[in-house]
Amino acid sequence: MSTGVCVVVTTTDSEDNMRRIVAAALDAKLAACVQVFPVRSFYTWKGERCESGELRLEFKTKVEDYKDLAAAIRAAHSYETPEILRLDVAQGDAAYLDWVKQSTR
Image (cartoon, rainbow, N blue to C red; front, top):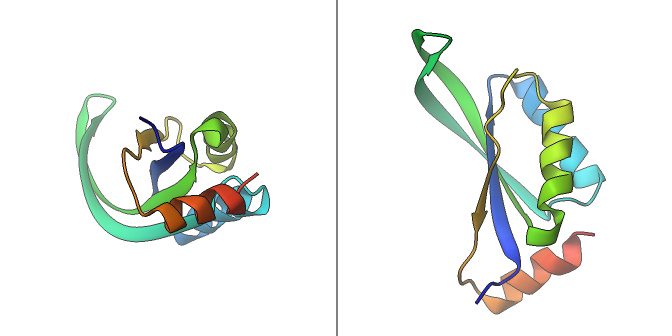
């Protein structure tokens, strides 16, 4: 059984880019809430091992808005290949899930 709500995750390397991405999502009502966390990322990019400080963004949205939110993130993002992951919410507080649904398109 699906709640119809998901969390969409991306990362970025700057405060400016984070604010552009957040504004694009909230202004278009594609997310009810965005939480931002500092993270340290380790990865391989174009054959080289990398380490960098990033900001992790978690968007609370409806599953039906995922494609539009992913497109908005991609359009505002500075990365060549941004991380954009959809994590479906299996269960959650009913009042919170209703708020997410009512706060988005």
